[in-house]
Amino acid sequence: MVELLRGEALALLASVQVGRVAFSHQALPAIRPVNHLVGEHGDIIIRTHTGAALLSRALLSEVVAYEADQFDPEIRTGWSVVVTGTATRVCDPMELAHYQAMLTPWVDSEADQLVRIRSDIVTGYRLRRSSSQQADDPPDGHRSLPA
Image 1 (cartoon, rainbow, N blue to C red):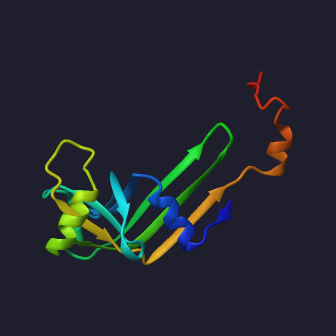
Image 2: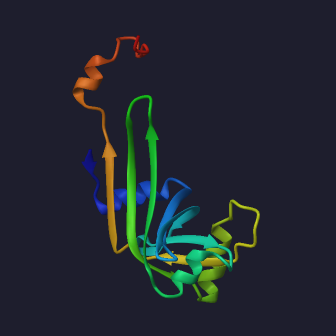
């Protein structure tokens, strides 16, 4: 595993559309898949519906985590990025219009609310194949299954 710099981690996060937001709900951890975009200063913007559990917590400026990743199980490589920061509701009408135009909901519901997750802490790791894994690969690039 190789630790990523903040800029590289945010660029990788911006390269995918879906991640998971982790927050506290009724005193227990909750994780929800959501689509996102990376906004100014590396903040994560997600779109949700009015009754969402996260939205009620975001009104309180709760600290949440947002994680996205991409892995290739065939060659055992990939990356993972976690952003930790305060979640707040986006209320500015110009920002709302801008982000709503850019961020289309994936689910068939009235997702008219936006939440900003400040990127206070950004951690990321890239998984690389070790030289011993590469040496074990057959010359033709095909792997055989274990017997």
